[in-house]
Length: 296
Ligand SMILES: N[C@@H](CCC[C@H](N)C(=O)O)C(=O)O
Image 1: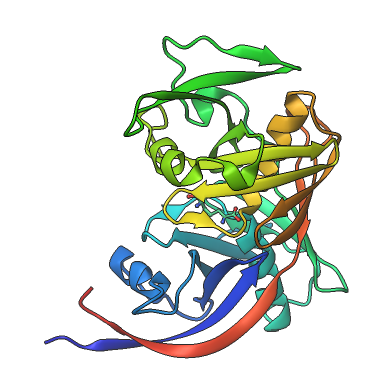
Image 2: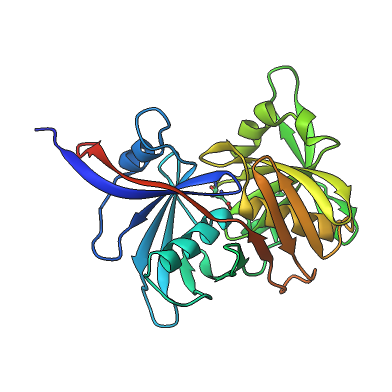
């Protein structure tokens, strides 16, 4: 017989990238991919780009485990805007009194720091610039060099005729393909975003970033996210875009990233081992309880 599960949740957002936060510090909910999809659904569920789950520390040296599911129900390695919301959640809910929290994710440990004004800075770790490890297949491709980094051609089977875009593959724990555009508002995100997301050269699919350089300390960015579509902001996307822009010699070490949902500030010293720091907002929206079918 079909029953229901009652689930308590908190809705949060960071620069308009919105989340359902679930607390599994006391007990696991054991949700299926379809149940995560249901929660994220904007018509039948709560509505969110990602579902963030708080779990107890899995090992010594970390404070919590941070589990991330995209709106499509798939579990992913990293989420930058979510990391800031996660930190505010565990802090403001009294799950920790630390202001610097060490958090285990699928792709390693990150360290969010909560400031007095409610903003959060996250040490996101070092970027991965080796295409093979993003992972991105370069077989048979010829890269172009710009600054100290490379751009790779990616051919897209658009409905009209094949188009080639030039991208930097960057991993921030999760995979990104960053390209330069003249104007983010005129970028072909709706058509190219889904084609890049599921391009066969990215075997784990990819988040597609479209970056317009305003000056050496400022960019405009839109991201078509893997498993979620275009979001109002993508924290790891902002980190990856700034890393690519610095590598190409176009940006300084501290960059304001304007997204459709707000401002993120990214800092990176420019060497492969240097860690990327991201600062931005993290806000509570509302709390509630939802009934979801237990047979999904
Ligand atoms: N919104 C995120 C990224 C979430 C995961 C991403 N869609 C993926 O599949 O890798 C962020 O703020 O970083």
